[in-house]
Amino acid sequence: MIRIAAVGDVHVDKDVVGRFRPALEELPDRADALLIAGDLTRHGTVDEAKCFATEFGGLGVPVVVVLGNHDHQSDAQDDVTRVLTDSGITVLEGTTTVLELNGHRLGVAGTKGFGGGFAGACASNFGEREMKDFVGTSERYATALREALRSIECDALVALTHYAPVPETLAGEPLEIYAFLGCYQLGQAIDEAPTALALHGHAHHGSERGRTPGGVPVRNVAHPVIKQAYNVYQLLSDTVDTKDTALVNV
Image (tube, rainbow, N blue to C red; front, side):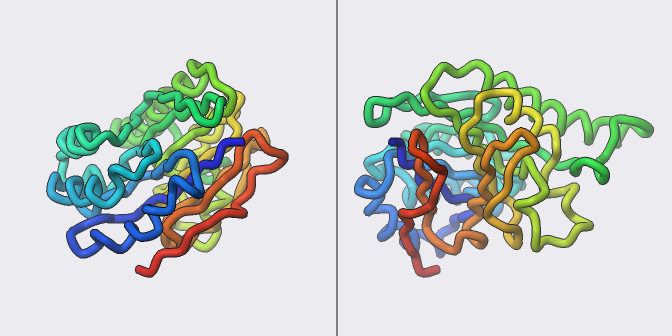
């Protein structure tokens, strides 16, 4: 069995440092790795990235993240990535990592992803150059995720994104903004590999549980949704579950 702790949208700045840490200190007893689904910072500054590294680094378990839209706000995403990497945190963007955990190989493929909407209410690659560029961005991130997922040899495969791959985990958000919260291309990419679990954030008012059209369990782990420091999901067991959790006061 592999136990994966997951959270997203923690939006760390100076005033957040210390809030998550008490629960995070318990991670080695509760989980084998921590995956974070983007929006690590509020405005994507180097100083905020350093705060995040202070809060989420050195936990005694591997920490794997993707960036979110907030982490791109200051156009310093490369510097943010460098700060995190220097702190021992793995940052994925169309890339993969394989973790040796409890005698099993956990493969994680990650990308920020992008918006565009879902079947019946999505943008199309047609018309003005601006629209084609928008949809092209969605397709580019999805293609990178698809190729990353299909490249991994492992015992259990997880897709980690910021934007949602399915609309079910957006339930609770206004329908009008679904197109800015995720896109169906990510779900298609997840279904084209033997993915065991898909994790995302971004939708603060969404719902936790969904499935891709191909049946892959999807979990929205945005902190405002799970209302905990992290949820723990069990892989290579009979079910994907959240039996083990840890609370944090924020």
